Image 1 (cartoon, rainbow, N blue to C red):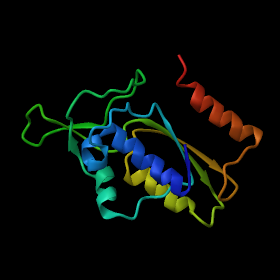
Image 2 (image 1 turned 60 degrees about the horizontal axis):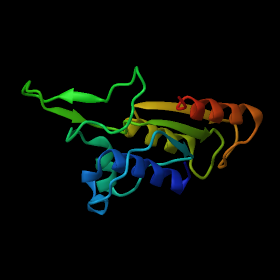
Image 3 (image 1 turned 90 degrees about the vertical axis):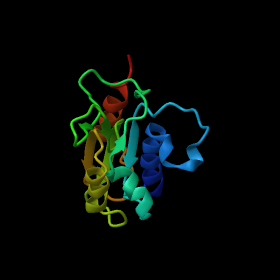
Image 4 (image 1 turned 45 degrees about the vertical axis):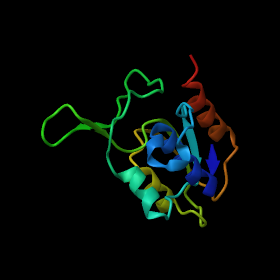
Length: 153
């Protein structure tokens, strides 16, 4: 879970745990991908290299380690020459994006760009009428609870 700048970091970390070969700092790190992430008031990274990590397609190097929901399939495309090579792009793991309609620090449009440009495969989007904070009213708590409980056996 991440809020604002931490939300952008959480989305990067989610991507790097799915594809550690993208960054040398992940060399030798053995960690399973996140089961899910919660991104609150997130925005896209400004570094062009990190933007490319989200938007480029990469060869599938090994079978995914994470457990998938029965209906979820990786966002995979075949190579142009028709061979069996597969490429993957976007963030494959489930995510919840909490976006404040009246956020003047990280505008809803900025959060929408993160959501759309980075091809989150199975996003749950929760808009609230507030600003730059994590709402804690009953409806919000119920939405968070339902999202997290969907990953329990």
